[in-house]
Length: 554
Image (cartoon, rainbow, N blue to C red; front, side, top):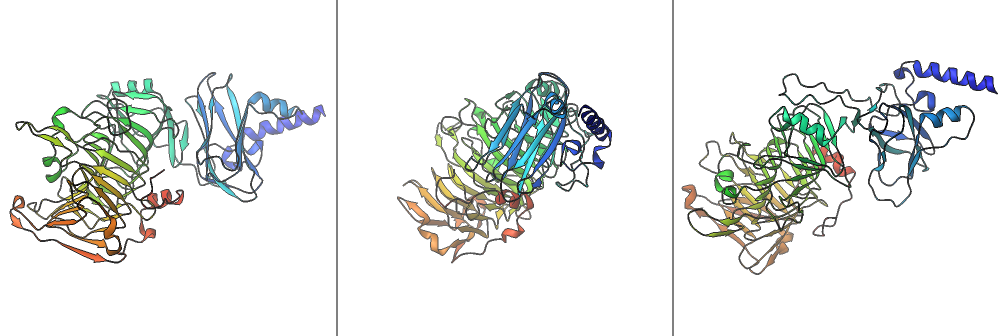
């Protein structure tokens, strides 16, 4: 028996010295693969082995398994000592086991802690169901290192390549090489002290050339994060999001001219500068620039961006959206194409969301409420209580490009929106070549406002389907100045309030010309083909359960 054990150990040692790419199947200990966060399929009643190296005693580590939420699935963690004992013929015991039994909510299964020694550790994922399941397994930590999986690994797509730091990036973008990838790209764990050290070399900006995972519940104070390359992600914790606190008058997270940036599970604490409580009209009716705007997230000239579960927190740290003013804009999309804003809470800003220029951006499952400008108008003594602020503002960008074909809500995925105005769609017809918000879609949203449910100025072709507007005696459902739009004729009863009417204003001298507008009532207006939505939107919708129109969003 002793000779058999020694032979087995020698064989295992030889196998582990061979290039992992040649053996990466995960069927057993000798062919364990890297926990790289890639999407994998696990057959019914089977398991798969993972291995990683742990380089510093006592260093924090996180093991996270994400699945469909419906599966009975588990993962088990083994130390080098436990594996060695097992190979000597004893019963295999684990240091930790996390199980998803039927009925546990759809959230990642996690194990967080540290180990008492360095070495090679193993994780085994087992499918307890009678059907195949898909999942991702990620192991991350500052002392964690993993090998690359083989493209021939039949259980997964090829592991992504860690992007190098952009040599043209400003100082401060030289993050440590990623310890392990998250989802579609690698993610290094970034602690607040390390973030401050990076920002100190770059005027308070943490420049990101590769993806980072922020620490659950941590506070990243007096910092701005700037995404510098494609596919970079800033990921927090879904159950205990970290908080980014940028300097006053700046954005917490920004990305410019990159593809597929992703921000998820983050709180951003912002504060409105007093002088900006009244400054609004030039910001919206003139070209939107990045510099004078600030708030939570700015994506400028971005394609296929992804913003999910971001909460804007006021300067007092509250999240109710009623006791504070947060930023000028919770999120600003400037000349974006195909960016998704989903399942976020944009509360207490002057504008919850600004879409300026660009097209085919999608806004679903959000609560965008209490976005109201308040304060005295300088030089007049007049109190402005909510006027000319909005939950969602759709306008045009710095080059005069119009916002077109954006989806604000989808069937089963509408938004709750409120502000001084619910939705503000505006154009300046003096601008050469036009510019404004045209041919956008508003579907199954609940709108509430201090003033107007929808205010549209010099725009055309916007479509409203199955929306409900709640308003008081001081407001109207639709205040239209020289705008044309289409409404679902079956949902005119969606206006609910003291005045309960649609109001048009055909001529407005402020624009220096006579403008005409018209409403077209059509039963079930045609919406874009769901199959033509951007890939990141279809990916998000595939893992969501539609909610009942007009019911509170969970």
